[in-house]
Length: 406
Image 1 (cartoon, one colour):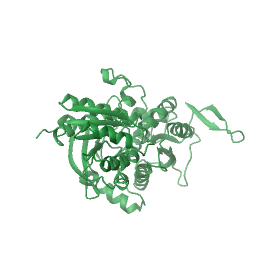
Image 2 (image 1 turned 90 degrees about the horizontal axis):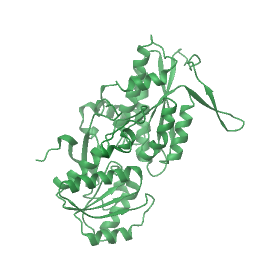
Image 3 (image 1 turned 30 degrees about the vertical axis):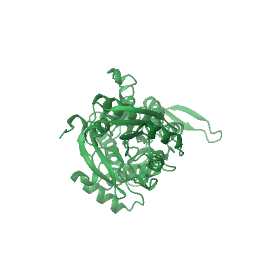
Image 4 (image 1 turned 120 degrees about the vertical axis):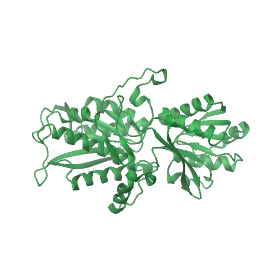
């Protein structure tokens, strides 16, 4: 493999061959240190989600170390802030790849950031596993809609189901449960938002719904007067937004202030407590999120208790449970590799960990954790939420393929 090191005097990146793990760091007890990298927006407008991701990864590592989950190994988290920017995510991936002790990266939050990290991950045989990415292209290639699905990055995995599933779930929920007949669709032109909105439109129209208008906005927009006017004229039963809560919160409030009284619906990028904080008129709005609410899962009781006991200042938010599972999947892959090599890490540990990830399976916080041939989670559970009395209330959960029409 290639090891990227930084020349201190010039700041330039240099490449050197890494053929052995003989100089692997040892802790005070003679254990091998394995670093798990983390990439998420821990500052900026999406930091509420990013901090929940960081904390949950740290929790998994702390518990693994406490329980001596992998004999002879101490895990350490190296968390980097990508500010939700693709170029920063790529820089972070390069930095983590340059540390020979890093055997995997948890993250990122944003699908657009993942696109910038995947090639670095592949070139360095470094597992990248996201608890939040939902764009189908990341695992199945750009022609997945034509049913030409090809896995381009064998080092990439995720514990979040795709927008092919989530967007279709949203379209069906809007038609069958909300009883909307006409929808106005808006996206933020980012990878995630465009894909989610497209999948929603396809499913909603397939079921008989009418798309009465579409609009593209910038994720940095906060003044939506022109959009409000167009939506009001179209008279939809529902407005769907493909994007994230920093823009959708103000959009929803301005729609209502402008006389558009129908609910706004979005995906997991909208499902955050901060959406409600940004929107005084969020009551009645909808959002979907991958998986089932951890508060309703018996499998998550210990995670919730442990998170609380750890004393984190920030809530675990939408991706806490899936982040814990992503981190634990990496830990289990390392465990498998160590067990198969007489209790030691092999020289080609990164490649072996990636190979082991394909076979990882366990009962996690969010349910059964396993991956298909594309690196996608086999768990297609989605939940629809609605804002009620200042909080997100779960309304309906189901695997999309088993959507109950009753």
